[in-house]
Length: 321
Image (cartoon, rainbow, N blue to C red; front, side, top):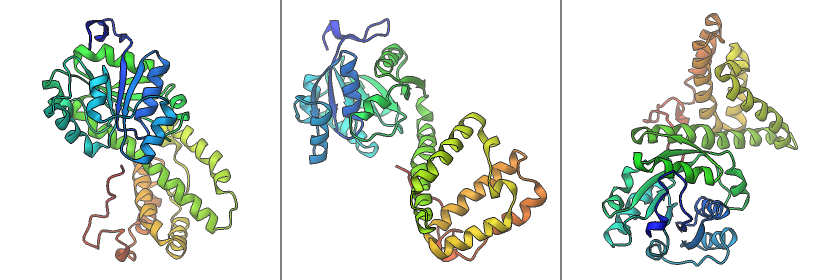
């Protein structure tokens, strides 16, 4: 990076050449957003046919090159590869001499802070962790969705202003996350967003099985209102048979799920138990009604399905990502 292209000490980066290593759904969208802010994408790497098509769609006329060539051409490099691939990528780039002193190296992993970039830091790179709290489609609509999107940001103190400026230029809002809190931060997002997709998909399947012709149209207003209420009021927004302590209704639900969709029983019971715990803790579920309800939720008849851990596991879900 030339002297004129060093991060502005007042926080607004100079116009930078931008490269993307990993043309998944995130990298091209961020590079396209930076292009709108006046930066210049100059190189992108992608292996699969889908990655190459996505790069051409989002960053037309930007050459597809190797990761090492991306670093050779760009002042600001976005490392947008899966979490598990990131440490090896950084180590490999540093060991092969691809990293240049003064180069801004930005990863978008929610799991990691800047420590994962230490091999590049030792080679003189400037490390930033900028994770957009958004789901991506790999299409131009993603650039629009970045407007108002929160970014989980971790950066060395001397680069905080530069990190903040980059996020704002992409239309986002920076939220500072301490290095040691990154895994918890990421778990919270996965719990809320990734699991939401599973819950909604299961609900639509069940509605179709019940004869509803347009489950998306039925769920849309209901889930929109539930999400809005939850964001505004937290646990006070809890409604439904679990929060009311209606054990008979919950038992009927479980019976129907066992018959029509046994694979959803574990998730239903796990979420109902969590809901009951929160409703009790916040005084929404009356203690005198909780005993029968918890008895239903502790039903052991599905041990073979693994919902109570009798299959030798603890019944927990795997990684969300």
